[in-house]
Length: 322
Image: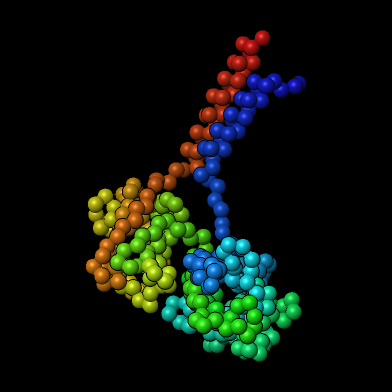
C-alpha cells in the first residue's frame, strides 16, 4: 500500500522525536592523542606553528605513530629542512632528549613503549647537527619507558633550522605541547582566564558531570606572554557546592589532573576556584554543572509513550482526511 504524504510526515516526526530523546545515551570514545597547538612564532614575515599528532597503531601492538611538522600559518604549507630538538617529560622525569631532522619537514616517528631505564632512538643520522632522520619510508623509532602509563606527557620542541639544512636560526623557536595518553584522552577545554601575567586553562573530560562518576579536572598554568608552562605553580584547588567547600587540594605542578567524584547532594552549579595562584595572592573561578543521572528506563518509557501518542494521532488523521 503506498504511503501518503501525511503518514510520511508523521513517521518523520516520530523518528526525529525519538532521536532527540535517545541522543544523550550515545557516547563517543576518543582514540587519538593530539597535542594542543601552541601560539605561532614569528620568523621574518612568517607565522609558524608546530603541529604534533600521536595515535596508537591499529591492531594488538602497543606502539604509537607520530608526526611532527612546522607549518606556515598563512599558506598552510609545511616548512622544509627542519631540525628539532625534542625533550619529553612525564611526572617530572625526563624520558627523552634528542635531535631530529626531516628534509620535507614532516617527521614521522614511532614510539615503542618498553620497560627500560633508558630511551633509545633508531634512524639515519643527519650530519650537520647529528640529528635522527627517517630511513626511507620507515619512521624514526623511539624505544623506551614512554607511554608506559596513563598521564600527560610534555613535549618541549625547539626548532634550530628551517628552509635549508645548514641555515641555523639566530635563536631557536621553542614550543611546549601536552599529549594525554590513556585515560586522559578526550579532555576538552572548558575555560581559560589570564591574571597576574599567568594564563590558566581548565580542561575537563565532559561538559557536565554526574553524581557517582569520577570527574577529571586538568589544570594548566602557563606564562601569559610566552605560552610556556611554568616550572612550578603553587596553588590551592577549591571546589564549592551550594556555598560549601567540598574539596581543598594543594599542588605545585603547572599541569596536573585532579580527580573528584560528586555526590547526589552536590547536584547543580559548582564553583572551581584556584586560590593564591603561583603565590601571587590572586584567585580565579570557573563554573561547572553536576546533573542528575537520567535512567535509561525513563528515557525508553518516554520514547515509547511519545511513539504511541503520535501513532494514534496519525491514525486519526488518516481516518478524517478524505
